[in-house]
Image (cartoon, rainbow, N blue to C red; front, side):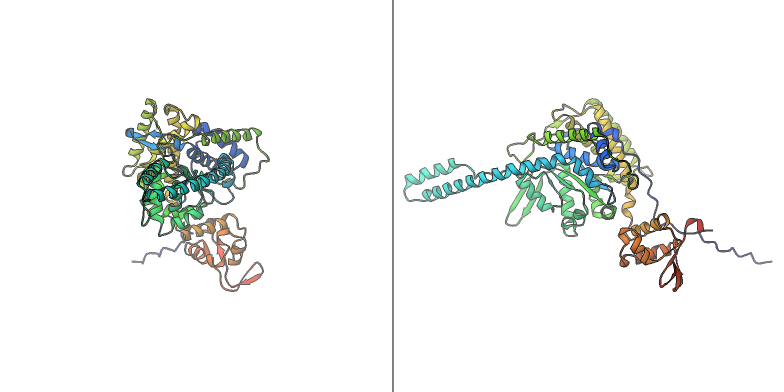
Length: 499
Protein backbone atom coordinates (compact mmCIF):
# COMPACT_ATOMS: atom_id res chain seq x y z
CA UNK A 1 0.00 0.00 0.00
CA UNK A 2 1.46 3.31 -1.11
CA UNK A 3 1.99 6.06 1.47
CA UNK A 4 -0.38 9.02 1.03
CA UNK A 5 0.93 11.98 -0.91
CA UNK A 6 2.16 14.66 1.51
CA UNK A 7 0.00 17.78 1.47
CA UNK A 8 2.16 20.66 0.22
CA UNK A 9 2.46 23.67 2.51
CA UNK A 10 0.59 26.70 1.33
CA UNK A 11 0.95 29.95 3.18
CA UNK A 12 -2.29 31.48 4.43
CA UNK A 13 -0.81 34.86 3.70
CA UNK A 14 -0.67 37.83 6.06
CA UNK A 15 -2.80 37.60 9.20
CA UNK A 16 -5.03 40.44 10.42
CA UNK A 17 -3.73 42.34 13.43
CA UNK A 18 -7.18 43.25 14.70
CA UNK A 19 -10.81 42.94 13.77
CA UNK A 20 -11.86 45.54 11.23
CA UNK A 21 -13.97 48.28 12.85
CA UNK A 22 -17.03 48.85 10.67
CA UNK A 23 -17.80 52.34 9.43
CA UNK A 24 -20.26 54.30 11.53
CA UNK A 25 -23.69 55.42 10.44
CA UNK A 26 -24.15 58.99 9.17
CA UNK A 27 -24.80 61.47 11.95
CA UNK A 28 -28.58 62.11 12.25
CA UNK A 29 -28.34 65.87 11.76
CA UNK A 30 -32.09 66.25 11.25
CA UNK A 31 -32.66 65.06 14.83
CA UNK A 32 -30.77 68.08 16.23
CA UNK A 33 -33.91 70.20 15.90
CA UNK A 34 -33.13 73.79 16.98
CA UNK A 35 -29.38 73.12 16.80
CA UNK A 36 -29.40 71.80 13.25
CA UNK A 37 -28.92 75.11 11.44
CA UNK A 38 -25.87 76.03 13.52
CA UNK A 39 -24.30 72.59 13.10
CA UNK A 40 -24.74 72.61 9.32
CA UNK A 41 -23.38 76.16 9.21
CA UNK A 42 -20.25 75.25 11.18
CA UNK A 43 -19.73 72.19 8.99
CA UNK A 44 -20.06 74.43 5.92
CA UNK A 45 -17.56 76.97 7.27
CA UNK A 46 -14.95 74.50 8.54
CA UNK A 47 -15.57 71.50 6.22
CA UNK A 48 -15.00 69.34 9.31
CA UNK A 49 -16.96 66.11 9.82
CA UNK A 50 -20.50 67.04 10.79
CA UNK A 51 -20.29 64.82 13.88
CA UNK A 52 -17.64 67.09 15.39
CA UNK A 53 -19.81 70.17 14.96
CA UNK A 54 -22.82 68.29 16.35
CA UNK A 55 -20.92 67.21 19.46
CA UNK A 56 -19.83 70.79 20.08
CA UNK A 57 -23.32 72.19 19.64
CA UNK A 58 -24.97 69.61 21.91
CA UNK A 59 -22.43 70.05 24.68
CA UNK A 60 -22.54 73.86 24.51
CA UNK A 61 -26.34 73.83 24.59
CA UNK A 62 -26.22 71.51 27.61
CA UNK A 63 -23.74 73.82 29.34
CA UNK A 64 -26.08 76.76 28.81
CA UNK A 65 -29.42 75.21 29.85
CA UNK A 66 -28.47 72.63 32.50
CA UNK A 67 -29.23 75.01 35.35
CA UNK A 68 -32.75 75.81 34.18
CA UNK A 69 -34.49 72.48 34.55
CA UNK A 70 -34.31 68.81 35.50
CA UNK A 71 -36.20 66.66 33.04
CA UNK A 72 -38.63 63.87 33.91
CA UNK A 73 -37.22 60.41 33.27
CA UNK A 74 -38.63 56.89 33.43
CA UNK A 75 -40.61 56.13 36.55
CA UNK A 76 -41.24 59.81 37.26
CA UNK A 77 -37.77 60.64 38.62
CA UNK A 78 -35.94 63.79 37.55
CA UNK A 79 -32.48 63.88 35.91
CA UNK A 80 -30.21 66.81 34.98
CA UNK A 81 -30.01 68.17 31.46
CA UNK A 82 -26.23 67.75 31.67
CA UNK A 83 -24.47 65.90 28.85
CA UNK A 84 -20.97 64.39 28.79
CA UNK A 85 -19.58 64.21 25.22
CA UNK A 86 -16.39 62.54 23.96
CA UNK A 87 -15.30 63.31 20.40
CA UNK A 88 -12.51 61.19 18.92
CA UNK A 89 -10.74 62.60 15.87
CA UNK A 90 -7.22 62.84 14.51
CA UNK A 91 -5.20 66.03 14.59
CA UNK A 92 -6.12 68.18 11.61
CA UNK A 93 -9.85 67.34 11.62
CA UNK A 94 -10.61 70.95 12.70
CA UNK A 95 -11.98 70.08 16.13
CA UNK A 96 -10.79 73.38 17.56
CA UNK A 97 -12.31 75.36 14.67
CA UNK A 98 -15.75 73.88 15.30
CA UNK A 99 -15.48 74.40 19.04
CA UNK A 100 -14.25 77.98 18.67
CA UNK A 101 -17.22 78.99 16.51
CA UNK A 102 -19.83 77.43 18.79
CA UNK A 103 -18.17 78.54 22.05
CA UNK A 104 -17.93 82.17 20.93
CA UNK A 105 -20.88 83.21 23.11
CA UNK A 106 -19.36 81.52 26.16
CA UNK A 107 -16.00 83.23 25.71
CA UNK A 108 -17.62 86.65 25.22
CA UNK A 109 -19.76 86.13 28.33
CA UNK A 110 -16.74 85.08 30.40
CA UNK A 111 -14.78 88.16 29.25
CA UNK A 112 -17.64 90.52 30.16
CA UNK A 113 -18.16 88.79 33.51
CA UNK A 114 -14.43 89.01 34.26
CA UNK A 115 -14.52 92.80 33.83
CA UNK A 116 -17.56 93.07 36.14
CA UNK A 117 -15.90 90.70 38.61
CA UNK A 118 -12.80 92.89 38.94
CA UNK A 119 -14.94 95.91 39.86
CA UNK A 120 -17.15 93.90 42.22
CA UNK A 121 -14.14 92.33 43.93
CA UNK A 122 -12.61 95.76 44.58
CA UNK A 123 -15.90 96.85 46.22
CA UNK A 124 -15.99 93.59 48.18
CA UNK A 125 -12.50 94.12 49.59
CA UNK A 126 -13.48 97.57 50.87
CA UNK A 127 -16.70 96.22 52.41
CA UNK A 128 -14.81 93.35 54.03
CA UNK A 129 -12.20 95.69 55.55
CA UNK A 130 -14.95 97.89 56.98
CA UNK A 131 -16.83 94.87 58.35
CA UNK A 132 -13.65 93.40 59.86
CA UNK A 133 -12.75 96.68 61.50
CA UNK A 134 -16.23 97.10 63.02
CA UNK A 135 -16.23 93.53 64.26
CA UNK A 136 -12.83 93.90 65.97
CA UNK A 137 -13.97 97.11 67.70
CA UNK A 138 -17.26 95.59 68.85
CA UNK A 139 -15.52 92.42 70.05
CA UNK A 140 -13.20 94.54 72.17
CA UNK A 141 -16.13 96.52 73.57
CA UNK A 142 -18.08 93.31 74.29
CA UNK A 143 -15.17 92.12 76.42
CA UNK A 144 -15.01 95.41 78.38
CA UNK A 145 -15.69 95.54 82.12
CA UNK A 146 -18.44 98.11 81.62
CA UNK A 147 -21.53 95.87 81.50
CA UNK A 148 -23.74 98.46 79.81
CA UNK A 149 -21.14 99.06 77.09
CA UNK A 150 -20.61 95.30 76.68
CA UNK A 151 -24.34 94.64 76.34
CA UNK A 152 -24.65 97.34 73.68
CA UNK A 153 -21.64 95.95 71.80
CA UNK A 154 -23.12 92.44 71.81
CA UNK A 155 -26.34 93.78 70.30
CA UNK A 156 -24.37 95.67 67.66
CA UNK A 157 -22.41 92.48 66.83
CA UNK A 158 -25.62 90.60 66.16
CA UNK A 159 -26.87 93.46 64.00
CA UNK A 160 -23.59 93.59 62.09
CA UNK A 161 -24.59 90.52 60.10
CA UNK A 162 -22.39 87.99 58.33
CA UNK A 163 -19.12 88.80 56.63
CA UNK A 164 -19.67 90.19 53.09
CA UNK A 165 -19.62 87.52 50.41
CA UNK A 166 -17.08 87.78 47.60
CA UNK A 167 -18.53 88.06 44.08
CA UNK A 168 -18.96 84.82 42.16
CA UNK A 169 -16.05 83.90 39.88
CA UNK A 170 -16.81 84.54 36.19
CA UNK A 171 -15.56 81.16 34.90
CA UNK A 172 -18.11 79.14 32.94
CA UNK A 173 -15.70 76.40 31.87
CA UNK A 174 -12.49 74.72 32.98
CA UNK A 175 -10.08 72.82 30.71
CA UNK A 176 -7.91 70.44 32.73
CA UNK A 177 -8.92 70.67 36.39
CA UNK A 178 -8.27 68.11 39.08
CA UNK A 179 -11.46 67.13 40.84
CA UNK A 180 -10.31 69.13 43.88
CA UNK A 181 -9.80 72.13 41.61
CA UNK A 182 -13.28 71.71 40.18
CA UNK A 183 -14.78 71.67 43.69
CA UNK A 184 -12.88 74.84 44.56
CA UNK A 185 -14.39 76.45 41.48
CA UNK A 186 -17.86 75.34 42.62
CA UNK A 187 -17.10 76.81 46.05
CA UNK A 188 -16.38 80.27 44.65
CA UNK A 189 -18.04 80.22 41.26
CA UNK A 190 -21.16 79.44 39.28
CA UNK A 191 -23.27 76.41 40.19
CA UNK A 192 -23.41 75.24 36.55
CA UNK A 193 -20.03 74.67 34.90
CA UNK A 194 -18.47 72.97 31.91
CA UNK A 195 -15.34 70.84 31.60
CA UNK A 196 -14.42 71.55 27.97
CA UNK A 197 -11.17 70.72 26.23
CA UNK A 198 -10.37 70.56 22.52
CA UNK A 199 -7.07 68.82 23.40
CA UNK A 200 -8.33 66.43 26.07
CA UNK A 201 -5.17 64.32 26.05
CA UNK A 202 -3.92 66.70 28.72
CA UNK A 203 -6.86 65.86 30.97
CA UNK A 204 -6.96 62.13 30.19
CA UNK A 205 -3.22 61.75 30.77
CA UNK A 206 -2.93 64.44 33.43
CA UNK A 207 -2.91 64.64 37.22
CA UNK A 208 -6.66 64.19 37.60
CA UNK A 209 -6.59 60.81 35.85
CA UNK A 210 -3.30 59.37 37.10
CA UNK A 211 -3.25 56.15 39.09
CA UNK A 212 -3.55 57.96 42.43
CA UNK A 213 -6.49 60.19 41.50
CA UNK A 214 -8.37 58.30 38.78
CA UNK A 215 -10.98 56.58 40.95
CA UNK A 216 -11.69 59.76 42.90
CA UNK A 217 -12.07 61.78 39.69
CA UNK A 218 -14.27 59.17 38.02
CA UNK A 219 -16.51 58.83 41.07
CA UNK A 220 -16.83 62.58 41.54
CA UNK A 221 -17.61 63.33 37.88
CA UNK A 222 -20.16 60.50 37.85
CA UNK A 223 -21.87 62.03 40.90
CA UNK A 224 -22.11 65.37 39.13
CA UNK A 225 -23.59 63.70 36.03
CA UNK A 226 -26.18 62.11 38.30
CA UNK A 227 -27.00 65.46 39.90
CA UNK A 228 -26.01 64.16 43.35
CA UNK A 229 -24.67 66.27 46.20
CA UNK A 230 -20.88 65.97 46.21
CA UNK A 231 -19.20 65.75 49.63
CA UNK A 232 -15.59 66.57 50.41
CA UNK A 233 -13.98 65.68 53.74
CA UNK A 234 -10.55 67.10 54.55
CA UNK A 235 -8.61 67.15 57.81
CA UNK A 236 -8.53 70.71 59.04
CA UNK A 237 -11.25 71.86 56.64
CA UNK A 238 -14.00 69.57 57.88
CA UNK A 239 -16.82 68.48 55.58
CA UNK A 240 -17.96 70.52 52.60
CA UNK A 241 -21.16 69.73 50.73
CA UNK A 242 -21.91 70.86 47.17
CA UNK A 243 -25.62 70.42 46.49
CA UNK A 244 -27.38 71.87 43.46
CA UNK A 245 -24.35 71.76 41.16
CA UNK A 246 -24.38 70.81 37.48
CA UNK A 247 -21.59 69.86 35.06
CA UNK A 248 -21.52 69.51 31.27
CA UNK A 249 -18.46 68.01 29.58
CA UNK A 250 -16.95 67.89 26.12
CA UNK A 251 -13.62 66.16 25.68
CA UNK A 252 -12.06 66.22 22.21
CA UNK A 253 -9.22 63.74 21.92
CA UNK A 254 -7.08 62.07 19.31
CA UNK A 255 -7.49 58.29 19.04
CA UNK A 256 -4.10 57.65 20.63
CA UNK A 257 -5.30 59.49 23.77
CA UNK A 258 -8.88 58.20 23.77
CA UNK A 259 -8.15 54.49 23.23
CA UNK A 260 -6.44 53.96 26.61
CA UNK A 261 -9.38 55.64 28.36
CA UNK A 262 -11.90 53.45 26.56
CA UNK A 263 -9.88 50.35 27.41
CA UNK A 264 -9.43 51.34 31.06
CA UNK A 265 -11.23 48.78 33.26
CA UNK A 266 -11.81 51.35 36.00
CA UNK A 267 -13.45 53.83 33.62
CA UNK A 268 -15.59 51.05 32.12
CA UNK A 269 -16.29 49.16 35.32
CA UNK A 270 -17.43 52.27 37.20
CA UNK A 271 -19.90 53.13 34.44
CA UNK A 272 -18.03 56.37 33.80
CA UNK A 273 -17.61 55.90 30.05
CA UNK A 274 -21.24 54.87 29.67
CA UNK A 275 -22.23 58.37 30.76
CA UNK A 276 -20.60 59.82 27.63
CA UNK A 277 -22.07 60.38 24.20
CA UNK A 278 -19.13 59.10 22.15
CA UNK A 279 -18.57 59.81 18.48
CA UNK A 280 -15.67 59.09 16.13
CA UNK A 281 -16.78 60.48 12.76
CA UNK A 282 -15.15 59.45 9.49
CA UNK A 283 -12.25 61.67 8.49
CA UNK A 284 -12.78 64.56 6.10
CA UNK A 285 -9.06 65.11 5.50
CA UNK A 286 -8.27 65.07 1.79
CA UNK A 287 -11.77 66.12 0.73
CA UNK A 288 -11.87 69.72 1.98
CA UNK A 289 -11.28 71.37 -1.37
CA UNK A 290 -14.22 73.77 -1.60
CA UNK A 291 -13.35 77.47 -1.51
CA UNK A 292 -15.37 79.75 0.71
CA UNK A 293 -18.76 79.07 2.28
CA UNK A 294 -22.36 80.19 2.10
CA UNK A 295 -22.82 83.65 3.71
CA UNK A 296 -26.00 82.30 5.31
CA UNK A 297 -23.78 80.09 7.46
CA UNK A 298 -22.33 83.14 9.21
CA UNK A 299 -25.86 84.32 9.97
CA UNK A 300 -26.78 80.93 11.44
CA UNK A 301 -23.69 80.90 13.69
CA UNK A 302 -24.46 84.46 14.83
CA UNK A 303 -28.01 83.40 15.70
CA UNK A 304 -26.65 80.50 17.75
CA UNK A 305 -24.25 82.85 19.55
CA UNK A 306 -27.05 85.31 20.29
CA UNK A 307 -29.25 82.59 21.74
CA UNK A 308 -26.35 81.24 23.80
CA UNK A 309 -25.54 84.71 25.15
CA UNK A 310 -29.17 85.31 26.05
CA UNK A 311 -29.37 82.09 28.07
CA UNK A 312 -26.08 82.74 29.86
CA UNK A 313 -27.25 86.23 30.85
CA UNK A 314 -30.50 84.86 32.30
CA UNK A 315 -30.33 84.38 36.10
CA UNK A 316 -30.43 80.69 37.00
CA UNK A 317 -33.03 79.45 39.49
CA UNK A 318 -31.37 79.10 42.89
CA UNK A 319 -32.56 78.43 46.41
CA UNK A 320 -31.52 80.38 49.48
CA UNK A 321 -27.86 80.14 48.47
CA UNK A 322 -26.87 81.83 45.17
CA UNK A 323 -24.52 78.93 44.37
CA UNK A 324 -27.07 76.15 44.84
CA UNK A 325 -29.39 75.50 41.93
CA UNK A 326 -33.04 74.68 42.42
CA UNK A 327 -34.00 73.68 38.85
CA UNK A 328 -37.72 73.30 38.15
CA UNK A 329 -39.11 70.02 36.85
CA UNK A 330 -39.50 69.73 33.09
CA UNK A 331 -42.20 67.09 32.57
CA UNK A 332 -42.79 64.85 29.57
CA UNK A 333 -45.98 65.05 27.57
CA UNK A 334 -48.05 61.88 27.41
CA UNK A 335 -46.84 61.18 23.89
CA UNK A 336 -43.20 61.77 24.83
CA UNK A 337 -43.52 59.43 27.82
CA UNK A 338 -45.00 56.68 25.65
CA UNK A 339 -42.21 57.01 23.07
CA UNK A 340 -39.56 56.87 25.80
CA UNK A 341 -41.04 53.71 27.31
CA UNK A 342 -41.11 51.99 23.92
CA UNK A 343 -37.49 52.94 23.30
CA UNK A 344 -36.53 51.66 26.75
CA UNK A 345 -38.28 48.33 26.10
CA UNK A 346 -36.52 47.87 22.77
CA UNK A 347 -33.08 48.62 24.23
CA UNK A 348 -33.74 46.44 27.28
CA UNK A 349 -34.61 43.50 25.03
CA UNK A 350 -31.47 44.10 22.95
CA UNK A 351 -29.31 43.61 26.07
CA UNK A 352 -30.32 39.96 26.45
CA UNK A 353 -28.01 37.02 25.77
CA UNK A 354 -26.85 36.82 22.16
CA UNK A 355 -28.65 40.08 21.38
CA UNK A 356 -27.18 43.12 19.64
CA UNK A 357 -26.35 45.13 22.78
CA UNK A 358 -25.26 42.28 25.04
CA UNK A 359 -21.64 43.43 25.11
CA UNK A 360 -22.35 47.13 25.69
CA UNK A 361 -24.91 46.81 28.47
CA UNK A 362 -23.46 49.69 30.47
CA UNK A 363 -24.12 52.05 27.55
CA UNK A 364 -27.46 50.48 26.68
CA UNK A 365 -28.76 50.68 30.24
CA UNK A 366 -28.29 54.48 30.20
CA UNK A 367 -29.57 55.01 26.68
CA UNK A 368 -33.14 55.90 27.67
CA UNK A 369 -31.83 58.45 30.15
CA UNK A 370 -29.52 59.87 27.50
CA UNK A 371 -32.52 60.24 25.20
CA UNK A 372 -34.50 62.18 27.78
CA UNK A 373 -31.52 64.37 28.70
CA UNK A 374 -30.96 65.27 25.03
CA UNK A 375 -34.68 65.98 24.61
CA UNK A 376 -34.55 68.22 27.68
CA UNK A 377 -31.59 70.16 26.27
CA UNK A 378 -33.30 70.68 22.91
CA UNK A 379 -36.51 71.77 24.67
CA UNK A 380 -34.88 74.32 26.97
CA UNK A 381 -32.65 75.64 24.19
CA UNK A 382 -35.79 76.52 22.26
CA UNK A 383 -37.64 77.92 25.31
CA UNK A 384 -36.37 78.15 28.88
CA UNK A 385 -40.00 78.37 30.04
CA UNK A 386 -41.23 75.39 28.00
CA UNK A 387 -44.04 73.61 29.91
CA UNK A 388 -43.07 70.10 28.77
CA UNK A 389 -41.05 67.93 26.41
CA UNK A 390 -43.16 67.25 23.35
CA UNK A 391 -43.43 63.94 21.50
CA UNK A 392 -41.61 65.47 18.50
CA UNK A 393 -38.64 66.53 20.61
CA UNK A 394 -38.57 63.11 22.30
CA UNK A 395 -38.34 61.51 18.84
CA UNK A 396 -35.27 63.65 18.22
CA UNK A 397 -33.73 62.67 21.56
CA UNK A 398 -34.34 58.99 20.85
CA UNK A 399 -32.87 59.22 17.34
CA UNK A 400 -29.70 60.79 18.74
CA UNK A 401 -29.44 58.37 21.68
CA UNK A 402 -29.84 55.45 19.25
CA UNK A 403 -27.01 56.79 17.11
CA UNK A 404 -24.71 57.16 20.13
CA UNK A 405 -25.56 53.68 21.37
CA UNK A 406 -24.60 52.22 17.98
CA UNK A 407 -21.39 54.27 18.05
CA UNK A 408 -20.59 52.89 21.50
CA UNK A 409 -21.12 49.36 20.25
CA UNK A 410 -18.96 50.02 17.17
CA UNK A 411 -16.13 51.62 19.14
CA UNK A 412 -16.14 49.31 22.16
CA UNK A 413 -13.83 46.81 20.47
CA UNK A 414 -11.50 49.56 19.27
CA UNK A 415 -10.98 50.52 22.89
CA UNK A 416 -9.66 47.06 23.67
CA UNK A 417 -6.79 47.35 21.20
CA UNK A 418 -3.39 47.80 22.86
CA UNK A 419 -1.27 50.82 21.98
CA UNK A 420 1.37 48.59 20.33
CA UNK A 421 -1.20 46.87 18.15
CA UNK A 422 -2.72 50.19 17.19
CA UNK A 423 0.70 51.48 16.10
CA UNK A 424 1.36 48.30 14.12
CA UNK A 425 -2.00 48.69 12.37
CA UNK A 426 -1.23 52.33 11.61
CA UNK A 427 2.07 51.30 10.04
CA UNK A 428 0.45 48.45 8.09
CA UNK A 429 -2.13 50.77 6.57
CA UNK A 430 0.49 53.35 5.66
CA UNK A 431 2.69 50.74 3.96
CA UNK A 432 -0.19 49.32 1.94
CA UNK A 433 -2.03 52.53 1.13
CA UNK A 434 0.60 55.28 0.96
CA UNK A 435 4.07 53.78 0.41
CA UNK A 436 4.81 53.35 -3.28
CA UNK A 437 7.63 50.74 -3.08
CA UNK A 438 7.59 47.00 -2.44
CA UNK A 439 10.25 47.25 0.23
CA UNK A 440 10.99 49.67 3.02
CA UNK A 441 13.73 50.58 5.51
CA UNK A 442 13.30 51.81 9.08
CA UNK A 443 14.96 55.10 8.06
CA UNK A 444 12.26 55.64 5.42
CA UNK A 445 9.50 54.96 7.93
CA UNK A 446 11.00 57.47 10.37
CA UNK A 447 11.41 60.05 7.59
CA UNK A 448 8.15 59.65 5.68
CA UNK A 449 5.87 57.48 7.82
CA UNK A 450 3.03 58.22 10.27
CA UNK A 451 3.78 60.90 12.85
CA UNK A 452 3.36 58.46 15.75
CA UNK A 453 6.25 56.36 14.38
CA UNK A 454 8.79 59.01 13.47
CA UNK A 455 11.19 57.90 16.18
CA UNK A 456 13.43 54.86 15.68
CA UNK A 457 12.82 53.66 19.25
CA UNK A 458 9.08 53.37 18.56
CA UNK A 459 9.50 51.13 15.51
CA UNK A 460 10.74 47.85 16.95
CA UNK A 461 7.35 46.74 18.31
CA UNK A 462 5.30 47.51 15.17
CA UNK A 463 7.97 46.02 12.86
CA UNK A 464 8.09 42.85 14.94
CA UNK A 465 4.27 42.57 14.96
CA UNK A 466 4.05 43.01 11.17
CA UNK A 467 6.83 40.48 10.62
CA UNK A 468 5.13 37.90 12.82
CA UNK A 469 1.82 38.62 11.12
CA UNK A 470 3.30 38.01 7.69
CA UNK A 471 2.99 41.59 6.41
CA UNK A 472 6.76 42.14 6.33
CA UNK A 473 9.67 39.83 5.45
CA UNK A 474 13.12 40.74 6.77
CA UNK A 475 15.59 40.96 3.86
CA UNK A 476 19.16 39.67 4.16
CA UNK A 477 21.66 42.12 5.61
CA UNK A 478 23.39 43.98 2.79
CA UNK A 479 20.39 43.80 0.43
CA UNK A 480 20.50 46.69 -2.03
CA UNK A 481 17.43 48.89 -1.71
CA UNK A 482 17.15 52.05 -3.78
CA UNK A 483 20.82 51.97 -4.73
CA UNK A 484 22.35 51.32 -1.30
CA UNK A 485 23.20 48.22 0.73
CA UNK A 486 20.97 48.14 3.79
CA UNK A 487 21.67 46.73 7.23
CA UNK A 488 17.94 46.35 7.83
CA UNK A 489 15.19 46.34 5.23
CA UNK A 490 11.84 44.60 4.71
CA UNK A 491 9.79 43.33 1.79
CA UNK A 492 6.15 44.32 2.03
CA UNK A 493 3.67 41.48 1.58
CA UNK A 494 0.43 42.54 -0.04
CA UNK A 495 -2.68 40.40 -0.15
CA UNK A 496 -2.21 39.98 -3.90
CA UNK A 497 1.18 38.36 -3.15
CA UNK A 498 -0.34 35.53 -1.10
CA UNK A 499 -0.83 32.31 -3.10
